[in-house]
Image 1 (tube, rainbow, N blue to C red):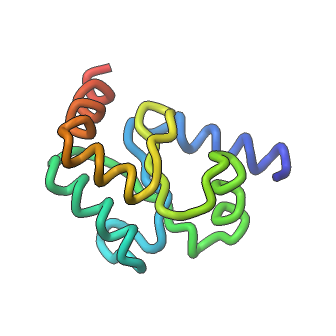
Image 2: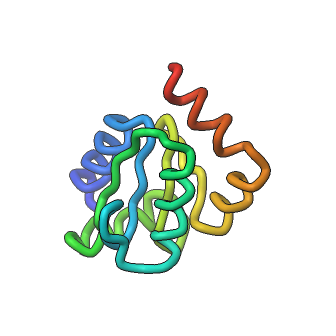
Length: 107
C-alpha cells in the first residue's frame, strides 16, 4: 500500500464516527454480507457513512491490507476496526454493537 493510500484511508476513517467499507452503498448493497451489516446499522437507526469498494480497486485492496482483514464489508466505529459481517452480527445480537455506536455518537 502506498503512503498516500494509507493516509487517504486514515483520513476517511477519522472523518466519520461510523464508517462501513462495503460492496455497493447503503441504498443499494451489492453483496449479501454488506447488506446484512447495512440492515443491522439501519435497525439501530444511527447515522453512518459507506464507502463503495467496487468503485475503487485501490481502496478495495488497500482496506484489506490496512485492517489486516481479508474480506469486505469492514465496519469502523470511532476510528477503530470492529470487524466483518459475522463479527458485527455477533455484536449486534449481544447488544454490544448498540453500545458501541451509542458511545461513538456521544463522543
